[in-house]
Structures are given as structure tokens and as C-alpha cells.
Figure 1 (cartoon, rainbow, N blue to C red):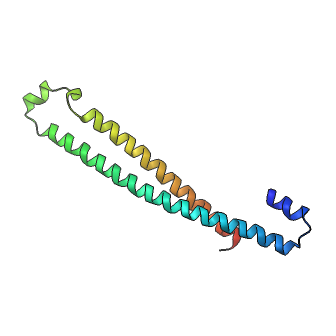
Figure 2 (figure 1 turned 30 degrees about the vertical axis):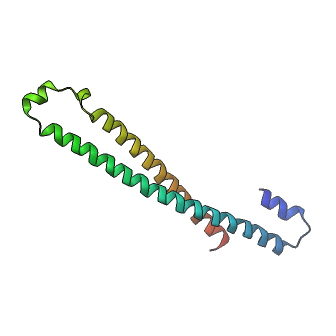
Figure 3 (figure 1 turned 120 degrees about the vertical axis):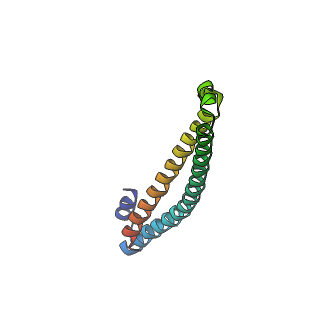
Length: 119
């Protein structure tokens, strides 16, 4: 809206105004691309953390399965690291999903802006 008002209210020829608006969009696109690269790196890091938390959780479950049946009856879940590992895995999953959504949203806006400026 501000860009349209700028075009309509200033005495600069229309082509120059359009060029200025286009330059602004290109600058925004470059900034968005930089932020998207950072978001992709963060998403990859969070995906690795999620995989690591899953490995730890699987290892803890496997240890419990391999215990002697009599010991399994005596032990309580709170006596193990399982609740802590479940919490860590849930946080890792949530963090990964948030970073994935951020990356996907940025990619969507990059396509929209590229479509508007004809890249």
C-alpha cells in the first residue's frame, strides 16, 4: 500500500518509481534468501538433534526390554531415565518442526516475491 501511494503521489516518472519498488523487492528477496539459508541450517541441526534423541530413547527402551523379567517387575519407570529421555525427545521434535515450518514459510515467500518481480 505504501509503495502504491508513493507511486501515485510523487512527481518522479512512473518507470523510475516502478524501478525503485522493484529494487526494494529485490533487496527484500536477498534478505529473505539469507534468512532462509540460516533457517535451513538450523532445521538440519535440529533434525540431527531429533535423530540423536530418538537413538537415546531407543537405546533406553532396548535396555529395559533386555532386563531380566523379574527385575522388570521390580523396577519403576521413574527409576529409569526414560521420562527424561521422552521429554528431551518431545522438545527436540517440537524444535525441529518449528524450524521446518519457518524454512518452508520462507521458501513460500521467496517464490511469491520472485513471481512479483519476475525473477
